[in-house]
Image 1 (cartoon, helix red, strand yellow):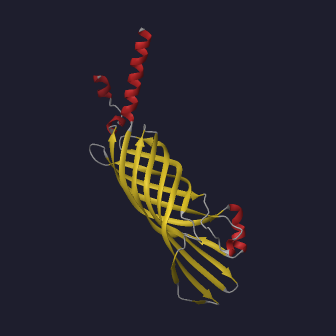
Image 2: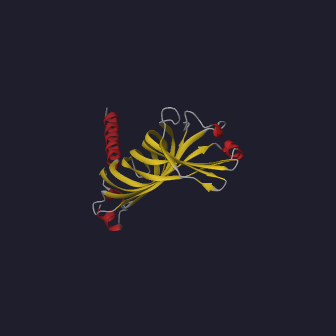
Image 3: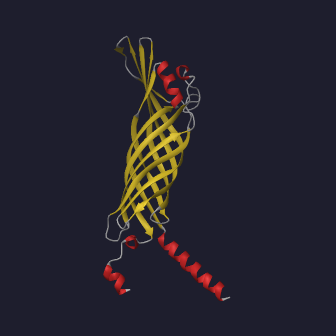
Amino acid sequence: MKKIILFLLLAGTFINHSQAKIQAGIGVKVGGNFGRWNNTIGDRLKLVTVGGTFIHEPGINAGIQGRIWINKFVGVNLAAEFNMGGSRSKTTQGTTITTTSHKENQLTVPISVLAGWGNERLRIFASLGGYFGYVINGKDKVTKNINGSEGSPVTTKADYKDVYKNIDAGIRLGGGVQVYVDKKLRSCVTFDVNYDYGFIKAYKTQPAVYSELKITPSKLNFAVGYMYTFGKDQHEEAPKRTFEATEE
């Protein structure tokens, strides 16, 4: 009986200690986004043979995120983002060079596991997870250069019924920094960099010039933000001074 009571007391102490280490935060972020369609490594040579290339399309990354640190080494991040990105493509057929700037507005929900290191004022981490995205709308701007003479660009609404897919999903990897800036060590400035690699084809009906390629979306985004934390007090991460240890 005494052993059972002792075990329960130790378990309770461990649970309370673990709970004390959990820290949750919520915040906002804003930054840039660079979208670019991918063709697999084996398809890169094929893309060259058909006379085409993909170029990054710049845009905006913004959203809210919730972050939970189980301890100073392991955490979880969940966000809801708005990504304005897309991709730019250039194809050459004979003496005609066609440049297509595809811009799209996407709602993205990523979730990642964080692994890193932290002290009283700073956390540095790497992240790995996945994301799901839904494209709300988009537009295409097409410019043709024929025999060295460039025509006026033509802008149209992107067709998500027959040409493009609305759904995007894949893996996310990245990293970041979280710096505690106030005296109570509750408010944080954050900086995150993430790369999304999509698994779902960008096209429903792929242009003939890309007929043999598997083209999937990708994006590189970075953002600075602000986060307020709850739970564990960051002062617990401060190393004990010699006189504090002596007083105890």
